[in-house]
Length: 308
Ligand code: GLU
Image 1 (cartoon, rainbow, N blue to C red):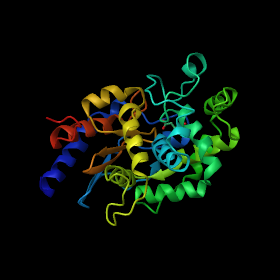
Image 2 (cartoon, rainbow, N blue to C red):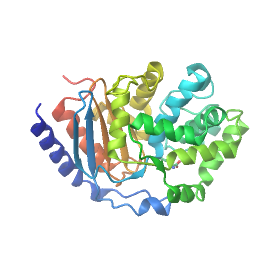
Image 3 (cartoon, rainbow, N blue to C red):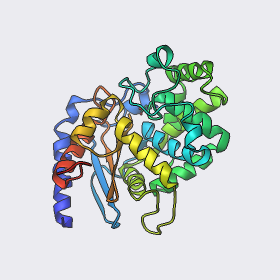
């Protein structure tokens, strides 16, 4: 497929995505996120052959939100190892909203997976024993191939002032003996990670490193342990799109992770990273235009894991 073909496909993808943004809304649980323009849409593709394709709003920065769960899990696996990380949480889709605590309290003694808030706060509890937040920013920059990543102070403050539900989850985890680190420190690490500012290009960078098995696309140097990368990608496939993960896997078939800031990170194995920005969300918290764009790209470029 030539450069011009890919550009045309991206142009069409953005136009298809745009037809749907009106049906969704920006996240409104904190004022900072509701200020985004819901009509913005952007897509960036970075290939293992080092080609870059962009269309639309790919440089605009927004907060990574739940996509940080991918970075946090990768770093926790790297520092603590698989057995320790999964001694306190499972790897099953929950079928519930990302911030639900119902099943955690009633039916399960462990968070369902590291991609929902309960799991990610558990992961943050491991991280605070091993690394500082500055270390995590350095990891995020390295893995996203983006030295411009910083914490968005306004979003952080806003999150911090509106985190009752996550605080409730964190204390419930402590009461069950799952979260053993200091609760407030773990919660703070979780919120800081959600407040990192990225753009569609940074997400494509992260996707490319994951598609490349954890190696830097140019130098080939190892940025992340290969097993950790495999675990992360598999959990993205089964749990990355909130309680819409099953349908997304059928329709798009690319391991992905979304965040309520409007980002989607997608990993096409051994081939490319795709970063999406589109802050208009569906009721599950996934970028509404972003999902349509990825479905179109998957179909036209044959990117589904089980493409014919
Ligand atoms: N800061 C959000 C929360 O913890 C992140 C949610 C998300 O992107 O799914 O509620």
